[in-house]
Length: 321
Image (cartoon, rainbow, N blue to C red; front, side):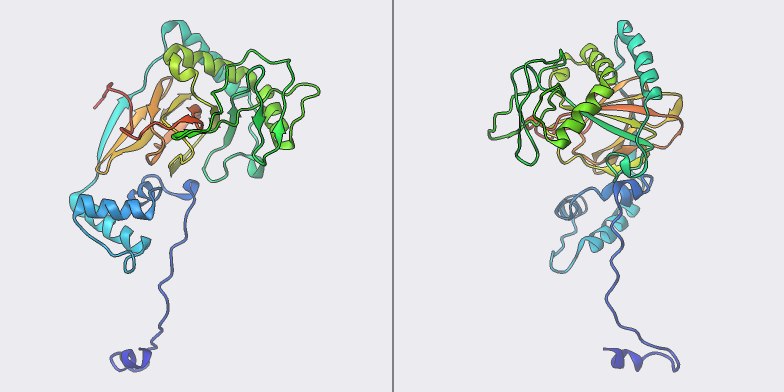
């Protein structure tokens, strides 16, 4: 091939034949959330192929068009139709009787020492701080370690909320709730560390739970964990382990920073969660909009129990524009 091409190029020019380099696969935190490509990256290759066919009428052969080729075709097709529609909606405000809890929660978040560097949880996203707290076990329950080790809990149990059932059945994901850390408890190193972390941040959990009870009592008994974040930035991703929607609450002195989610192939909805609760299905690509200031957030999510069908990406009728 090089010899054939050489016959058609000017003298003195070299013909180099090689494999087209594959672009580096960026993590969620490395993606520029303002770019359409970054917003589409969380979708699987088959999902991108289906979108290209269903929305733009372009059929492709998996043996001929790889993921990078799909992106080239999709971005060209989107460029023809112009920017996607942007919709802004407001999350739900807690009742007046719970407004004081927001101030208390913010103060607790501000006083939290978030692990940094390699010690920060969820390294694939971009944030100054990220801490996961899992729901504790209720009295008489036992959990199962990720490595299969049984974790027995003694009878001294806290008054924190009851965990969901652990029954394995179709359409269910098993619960791996967090047991309380008590003297004599037989726990593996990972679960003991998680239990100690929960005790350290128990006040944040209690305040966050009380707020959720005031907004959505049913969901307050369903979520299995919360994420405490500080200055979460962009990071388009999907929550593959979630079994249903999550709630997001943002606190602090900042402007912007709503939760953006792809609500249709041609629309992005930004949910205003500043001192409000936005309900979003994280199994659709979502990210945090640009903001200025200091932004803290609590994300309530569920990774065990009945798997809810994917229907809409945003659960609210309070449209701003």
